[in-house]
Image 1: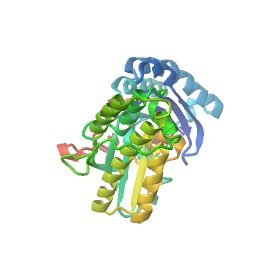
Image 2: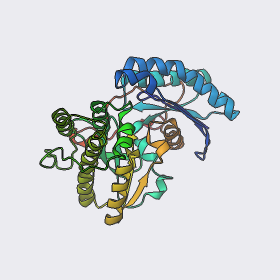
Image 3: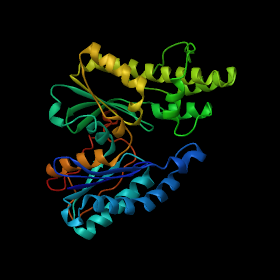
Image 4: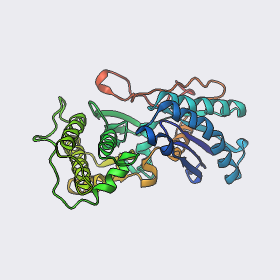
Length: 351
């Protein structure tokens, strides 16, 4: 049995799975109410909430599953990327727990966990695959050479898609978190879509994403026209259309170049209904098999961490007791363009 811990940002999540990946316990404790007044995640507030919530959630997981620490095979914890303080909180808690019961720790890559959540099993991937992780902190495309090895082939050069959703929602006076609020508002729209720019977004690498200009154009449009109760859905729908269209433009370009058999889609923004619909249509036209994470697993969660952690433990990629020398990392470590080696999970039993 694997205990999973996820604290990469503001959600505190704990999961317990057996060797088949079956769910014995899974809970996500949202901190939205703590950060709402700030309009975004405050790292220090998130860390304190993780410290207060983790012990209770782990105890609840064991009690409700009738499992003891002696039954555990290991503890899987998000190692990165994410907020440094939040990651340190989860890793430190996992180290203390594992040390007390002499359990191995599995450091799990947040990006890979999101992509893993989109497929039932790695064995379903045959031929070529690409993966899109789209969230508040990431809008990156990967070539899945051999699971779980990823090579980044496109990225956002400035802001992530999720941040553009959140900032746009804030400009419209919509409640936090902004992404879901903006989608709900956009669904009410009956007016024509407002174009944010006169030309398509351009980047040095035509496969890369860029959302900073769309944010600025949207802010200027809101300032120029003003927002009323009648036009708020129109503004929301216009920003959503601009973001989704930009993502689809880049995704179509990468599919044309890579000719993948499979597309994996994960991350919080992958829950957006318009994005899911457009990606499904694109894959149907291109003959690509689409793998979408369920809506419940699109956001940060410990179930994806626990399941991937179990697979890594079986393959020998873990930190054995008492050599828990895993350290958090805040940035994606699979960027080939800067000469960085594909990160993977350190294999302490063979490396």
